Image (tube, rainbow, N blue to C red):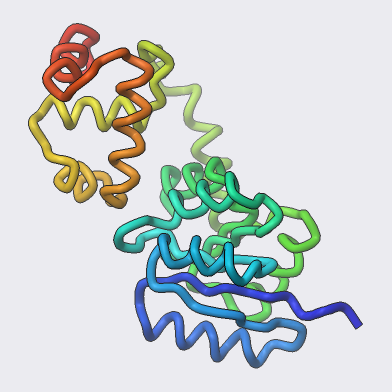
Length: 216
């Protein structure tokens, strides 16, 4: 028999964590090795417990699922991430997959679908909910028909440009995090990257740069 798939559950809602732990415990061939309430805890437990898969929610305090996935990929890419969330918007899906997630399910998924997705990601395959796949197909299909995406200066990503524009509006890191629905840690990471790319040294220079380059 194949060894059980060792799973770490990360979700900020206690009832969801406990419910998933119970559900997964009833599935043959799956072992829940731990639970985490936010991205920081998920990363620390994943490094210590070395599960096969982290079942990762996206919207969590302190460090969100996308940032935790990115850090885990950089630390140990052998630990797979399967996103389980209520969000199916294009931004959430694309950000999670770019961060290194190997699968993406909604919380409407059945126990059987979760089990199948766990098996797929542990075997090196992708596991994406059909509804999410349709979202991605539609986004790709309709994207070219709209106006071309403007070229951003200094190699900024779209999200870094968004953060820069919000800095120019006078928003604090906490306010930016709330506006973009990400953690403050993620915002700080974006700011460090955009500062390095644009060569600015502080927020005042960042505001000037944003206005000079039409990013306000």
